[in-house]
Image (cartoon, rainbow over all chains, first blue to last red; front, side, top):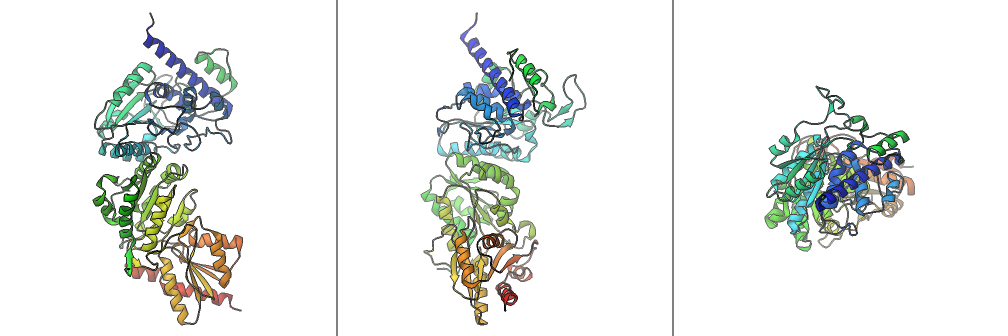
Length: 289
Length: 314
């Protein structure tokens, strides 16, 4: 027998699948854009916007809303898809992604898009404004929580560790980072062992160990298990006295068989046949762009 | 009124003053508060003084995040770090979204307590001018610095305020009010116009006194705002004497000299000499020795004016 919880999770899974379909279709139409990263982040973004963040799409400037920063700004289309499904702007507007005069820029533009809390794109910069928002919340006595999604490649930037130090120093338990640990970046390093299908190029090993050394509360989750994502995010909100990072173990290109774990699909134009295969993988066989 | 004021003291005292009016004003320091004097702010408002450590890139990003929540962050560090180390942060999370971040750029120019070229910012005005959305200001003395900080805090958007370390002569009356974009005539003259910015405007005034003793009448105009700079004031100054010398404690490329050349080139072509640092870096040394070696003393400004008069004499 299906419980209400199961139904809710199934609905959430379908929303995440729809977000993935919108990513593929939007990138196809734009003939440009990133795929691997938005697909690896889609489940976490869906859970955050539909179940965790205290936000109101009708009031994107509501002062007491929870904040979200997509530090890996090149996954913008993933965020736009989820924001559209959540009601921040019409889903049809995704067709304008990357186009001239569009509110949906190649990288998130807080001056254009409803629901974008910080400009990102140049990597390694999103955690610092998150620290600023969390610090401001403490100073102003506000209860909102600040979330920052980091890419596993961008934590190679030194500024991330500057921010990590200050967040710990100010005991920012109102700040949670989610590391989209899909193991691949645009190019990365040659891995010593090739494991079958997995493209032998890697980003960074055991990031949790590094964050723990900087005094952060470290949690791990399967970045594609929606129940686990929800539980872990809620656990992060319980942290006291220190910031939390969730290591979200994910698969780059998740949901589209031929993109999974292949760094070549970090960013690449799609053919019509590519889209058809992707739609089939995402539960809509026979549908194209 | 004091004869001299150190802008860094003015910086700290003005922050304390502003904190009373603006409850959301905070100061972020890059481990230099006892140099920039932001320590005085910490003594008055310990909870609104946020030490960010030796990590300026993060400091800029934190300021941007705080600004989105309605706070007014003033940054305290040396110009050389805020401009150069932070340039990408400043570009993407402050200038592009036009956030309300105020950059108190201390220790600009050559006078950095003998620390040498690593700590002397001689390109900050050019770099900041090239950043869209930035307002760029170089006050001439402590009185003007205070007024600039009041206007900057009351005006939304990112501001770059160029400050210097050591005491400098006070040239403005206590009730002087800075007006963004406008130039200020410091001395009337008829033979040649000297346009200065920052503390170099004071040396331009001293140069005009030297020239007067030789029978040369120099008009001295101070341009505190490098951007946006209203062309009308510069054009008026050029029209009056027909000859313009710019002078700045900064490279002659892209700063005041660049701004004036752009304006005159487009609006009123006028014989022009750019005086300042000749596309080079400084070094360690006493302030007087630096002025002498790098040709920024009043006598050098006067010579630049004489040279232009000679070159254009019929």
